[in-house]
Image (cartoon, rainbow, N blue to C red; front, side, top):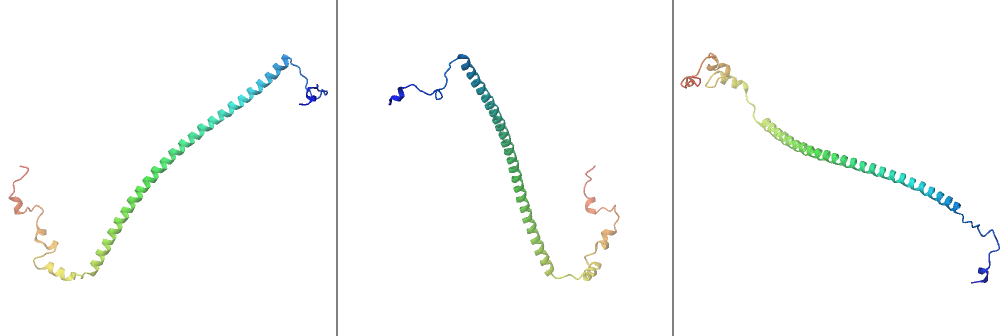
Length: 154
Protein backbone atom coordinates (compact mmCIF):
# COMPACT_ATOMS: atom_id res chain seq x y z
CA UNK A 1 0.00 0.00 0.00
CA UNK A 2 1.30 3.45 -0.86
CA UNK A 3 1.18 6.63 1.11
CA UNK A 4 -1.14 8.31 -1.35
CA UNK A 5 -3.92 6.04 -0.20
CA UNK A 6 -3.86 7.81 3.17
CA UNK A 7 -3.87 11.36 1.77
CA UNK A 8 -7.15 13.17 1.33
CA UNK A 9 -8.28 13.72 -2.19
CA UNK A 10 -7.31 17.09 -3.47
CA UNK A 11 -9.78 17.32 -6.31
CA UNK A 12 -13.45 17.98 -5.46
CA UNK A 13 -14.61 16.93 -8.93
CA UNK A 14 -13.71 13.34 -8.28
CA UNK A 15 -15.61 13.25 -5.04
CA UNK A 16 -19.45 13.40 -5.17
CA UNK A 17 -21.22 15.66 -2.82
CA UNK A 18 -22.57 13.63 0.00
CA UNK A 19 -25.71 14.95 1.47
CA UNK A 20 -27.65 12.45 3.44
CA UNK A 21 -30.91 14.22 3.81
CA UNK A 22 -33.95 12.14 4.55
CA UNK A 23 -36.15 13.94 2.01
CA UNK A 24 -33.72 13.13 -0.81
CA UNK A 25 -33.62 9.49 0.25
CA UNK A 26 -37.45 9.37 0.37
CA UNK A 27 -37.66 10.85 -3.16
CA UNK A 28 -35.12 8.38 -4.45
CA UNK A 29 -36.94 5.45 -2.83
CA UNK A 30 -40.33 6.65 -4.14
CA UNK A 31 -38.92 6.92 -7.66
CA UNK A 32 -37.44 3.45 -7.33
CA UNK A 33 -40.77 2.15 -5.95
CA UNK A 34 -42.67 3.78 -8.87
CA UNK A 35 -40.24 2.23 -11.34
CA UNK A 36 -40.60 -1.18 -9.74
CA UNK A 37 -44.41 -0.84 -9.73
CA UNK A 38 -44.34 -0.02 -13.46
CA UNK A 39 -42.13 -3.05 -14.10
CA UNK A 40 -44.48 -5.22 -12.06
CA UNK A 41 -47.51 -3.94 -13.99
CA UNK A 42 -45.73 -4.62 -17.28
CA UNK A 43 -44.71 -8.08 -16.11
CA UNK A 44 -48.29 -8.81 -14.99
CA UNK A 45 -49.63 -7.72 -18.39
CA UNK A 46 -47.01 -9.83 -20.14
CA UNK A 47 -47.86 -12.91 -18.08
CA UNK A 48 -51.58 -12.35 -18.70
CA UNK A 49 -50.87 -12.30 -22.45
CA UNK A 50 -48.84 -15.51 -22.02
CA UNK A 51 -51.74 -17.18 -20.19
CA UNK A 52 -54.18 -16.07 -22.91
CA UNK A 53 -51.78 -17.35 -25.58
CA UNK A 54 -51.42 -20.63 -23.71
CA UNK A 55 -55.19 -21.03 -23.57
CA UNK A 56 -55.41 -20.26 -27.29
CA UNK A 57 -52.70 -22.83 -27.99
CA UNK A 58 -54.51 -25.46 -25.89
CA UNK A 59 -57.80 -24.68 -27.66
CA UNK A 60 -56.07 -25.00 -31.05
CA UNK A 61 -54.45 -28.25 -29.93
CA UNK A 62 -57.81 -29.66 -28.82
CA UNK A 63 -59.43 -28.57 -32.11
CA UNK A 64 -56.59 -30.20 -34.05
CA UNK A 65 -57.00 -33.41 -32.04
CA UNK A 66 -60.73 -33.52 -32.79
CA UNK A 67 -60.02 -32.85 -36.46
CA UNK A 68 -57.41 -35.64 -36.49
CA UNK A 69 -59.86 -38.09 -34.93
CA UNK A 70 -62.56 -37.12 -37.44
CA UNK A 71 -60.10 -37.52 -40.32
CA UNK A 72 -59.02 -40.89 -38.95
CA UNK A 73 -62.65 -42.05 -38.81
CA UNK A 74 -63.14 -40.87 -42.40
CA UNK A 75 -60.05 -42.78 -43.50
CA UNK A 76 -61.24 -45.94 -41.73
CA UNK A 77 -64.67 -45.63 -43.38
CA UNK A 78 -63.09 -45.02 -46.80
CA UNK A 79 -60.83 -48.06 -46.37
CA UNK A 80 -63.89 -50.15 -45.51
CA UNK A 81 -65.67 -48.84 -48.61
CA UNK A 82 -62.61 -49.59 -50.74
CA UNK A 83 -62.51 -53.17 -49.40
CA UNK A 84 -66.23 -53.58 -50.16
CA UNK A 85 -65.81 -52.16 -53.66
CA UNK A 86 -62.81 -54.43 -54.33
CA UNK A 87 -64.85 -57.41 -53.15
CA UNK A 88 -67.76 -56.38 -55.39
CA UNK A 89 -65.37 -55.87 -58.29
CA UNK A 90 -63.92 -59.36 -57.76
CA UNK A 91 -67.41 -60.84 -57.72
CA UNK A 92 -68.37 -58.92 -60.87
CA UNK A 93 -65.19 -60.11 -62.63
CA UNK A 94 -65.92 -63.69 -61.60
CA UNK A 95 -69.50 -63.43 -62.89
CA UNK A 96 -68.27 -61.85 -66.12
CA UNK A 97 -65.75 -64.66 -66.63
CA UNK A 98 -68.48 -67.23 -66.03
CA UNK A 99 -70.73 -65.40 -68.49
CA UNK A 100 -67.97 -65.25 -71.09
CA UNK A 101 -67.27 -68.94 -70.66
CA UNK A 102 -70.98 -69.77 -70.89
CA UNK A 103 -71.36 -67.63 -73.99
CA UNK A 104 -68.34 -69.30 -75.56
CA UNK A 105 -69.77 -72.72 -74.72
CA UNK A 106 -73.16 -71.72 -76.16
CA UNK A 107 -71.52 -70.46 -79.33
CA UNK A 108 -69.81 -73.82 -79.78
CA UNK A 109 -73.02 -75.84 -79.51
CA UNK A 110 -75.00 -76.95 -82.53
CA UNK A 111 -77.89 -74.74 -83.51
CA UNK A 112 -81.37 -76.23 -83.58
CA UNK A 113 -83.55 -76.24 -86.62
CA UNK A 114 -86.68 -74.39 -85.48
CA UNK A 115 -88.78 -75.44 -88.46
CA UNK A 116 -88.50 -79.12 -87.53
CA UNK A 117 -89.59 -78.31 -83.96
CA UNK A 118 -92.71 -76.58 -85.21
CA UNK A 119 -93.58 -79.62 -87.27
CA UNK A 120 -93.03 -81.95 -84.28
CA UNK A 121 -95.18 -79.78 -82.03
CA UNK A 122 -98.02 -79.84 -84.55
CA UNK A 123 -98.21 -83.64 -84.53
CA UNK A 124 -97.09 -86.26 -82.06
CA UNK A 125 -97.16 -86.56 -78.25
CA UNK A 126 -95.76 -83.05 -77.68
CA UNK A 127 -98.07 -80.15 -78.49
CA UNK A 128 -97.55 -76.42 -78.59
CA UNK A 129 -99.29 -74.76 -75.66
CA UNK A 130 -101.98 -73.15 -77.78
CA UNK A 131 -102.69 -76.54 -79.40
CA UNK A 132 -102.93 -78.43 -76.13
CA UNK A 133 -106.27 -80.05 -75.30
CA UNK A 134 -106.10 -78.35 -71.88
CA UNK A 135 -106.01 -74.96 -73.56
CA UNK A 136 -109.52 -75.53 -74.98
CA UNK A 137 -111.08 -76.20 -71.59
CA UNK A 138 -113.36 -73.79 -69.87
CA UNK A 139 -111.88 -71.81 -66.95
CA UNK A 140 -114.28 -73.53 -64.57
CA UNK A 141 -112.86 -76.95 -65.47
CA UNK A 142 -111.56 -78.78 -62.43
CA UNK A 143 -109.37 -81.85 -62.88
CA UNK A 144 -110.70 -85.17 -61.55
CA UNK A 145 -108.00 -85.58 -58.96
CA UNK A 146 -109.05 -82.30 -57.31
CA UNK A 147 -112.70 -83.39 -57.11
CA UNK A 148 -111.77 -86.40 -54.98
CA UNK A 149 -110.33 -84.26 -52.15
CA UNK A 150 -112.57 -82.83 -49.38
CA UNK A 151 -113.33 -79.10 -49.44
CA UNK A 152 -111.14 -77.34 -46.82
CA UNK A 153 -113.68 -74.52 -46.39
CA UNK A 154 -116.45 -76.88 -45.33
